[in-house]
Image (cartoon, rainbow, N blue to C red; front, side):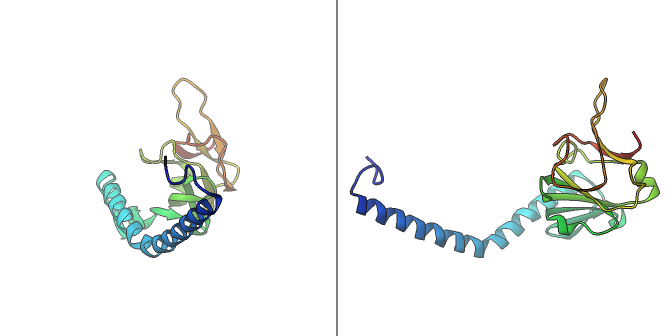
Length: 172
């Protein structure tokens, strides 16, 4: 029988307290060592992105830029990571996880294709670019079916069709 399976109430309380102290210590110690571990993990992910999507420039262990800096990827982002003049899409709801962003221009308002990795991964967004309002949409490519779409405007913690969008484009 395990140590926690049977025993007096006092012994169990002592073990529970000890476990809580050990867990708290692990959280503190993990917090102290998390930054180097996260940086190493991000560096590996950055290298994988650069191998998969050519012509990128590593900005930091958290960021890559393409097309002279007008298209970027942040591995760890928040809503605050989306500056004015950019369109930002996030891997997770509530503006968390990896974020892809691009500066708007008349050419980019027509159509912006997501890379293979970003297709079907968008869960939240913040549209801070300069494309014509009420005429820029997140869209999903579906052969022989109507494409699910959502107006790409404002700030949304959750998208209508989670993990479904493949590109952003002007008009329906």
